[in-house]
Image: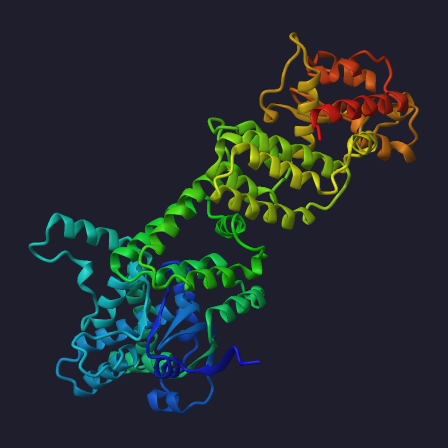
Length: 591
């Protein structure tokens, strides 16, 4: 097997000697370190440093201070930094400030100028014929202006700190925006920390400013240690993120897919389009990009799990590198699908089919989302019927205690089949028939089995799913004069026979303490109340809970009619209500 990674230890100067063109890819976050992290780095670098040793002694000292790992990924002749960009950027900013301060304070001091030029050579690439200086490290676009000004400055300040004479209002506005960025604030704070952690303590040891700056830059370039892990390709990088999870690396398949989209962009205009589209997509799906991208993939492609998602997208995108229309068409489709995905996963009350979509979310039905997405995107007029079918399957599956993960591949396969039928312009009825046939070929409990399962069902924990089931039963029981639950969020779940019964509750119910867990969790013992019952009587006997303020007797919900008609609440009543619910459930969730 070909080697996927290299790892070695370097000084910072060694890093910039070997890796002469490092860039922060667009999918990475912009620079974000604040004062706390920067000051901690200064303390790591300079706390306890003996300023009297001098540069030569420091350079010859073999001991180095370890500052962590940097993860790079080879990209042609360049390397993208995938982890450690904050540290690399901050160290480079410190060097840039030290270099600028040396230039500014040299006043004809040749030795100081040479040292400043030496630092500059560590920061910049040496490219024959290049008129413009190019830094070895290039942050992403949001941070580039400030970083380049700092790297090129021959002062202890940068141009951005003051608006130039004659600047237009637009230029002033742009400068104000840049001055708000964390990287600009970092540069200014580095100036303050250099005084406090370098110049002042060195002066206290009798060291002048030039030698202090010289010693500080030597410390940064030659006396710190970084472990560089180089992944030879992006797939290897993604696998590395999975295995280095304990280090808190937070890149995902979505980050790398985004980078591949940027790689397809051939012009600045296309790159801006990728960036804007991705921001809109991320905002639409509330940041849940991996779940969305996987759902989108499964609507029309072979099944893939999360850990294979990047490879699948990369292969697909690589096929279209020479298609000038592909990138825009793909992102348009992705953006449209993201809006539909958002409505599926977090519908608003004004969303069409809100109640059905919210029901599936309350039931935890996620594996069906590829099918819902392809239907909502292409045949929204049949979505309500598809939702109803999936709800029945989900409730029957849940009550039977089946594992939902086994449905994942089935829904994915059906989604691909439906996408094919839609491409072939099949009718709505053809689509519905195919979905029905395919879903009914699964091992869904029939009516007799479902009724039996429902009657015996025990509620292990109260959840949105149980609340939804009780709300649907209440709706089925409701008549003209009964409250119909319009919003499940307006009711709460109550155990009629308490989960932690008092002695009085045990005596009244004739249920033993050993039997109490079994009977308190039976579906027939669970109900809905429009207002929370007083916590002080929650574990009391049935008569006390009936008579309480906001108690069972005052409820107008149809689901409580049978309960209110009972003078006792014992095993027989719980079992009878479970049986009633089971018979009703067959009609509420037909199959």
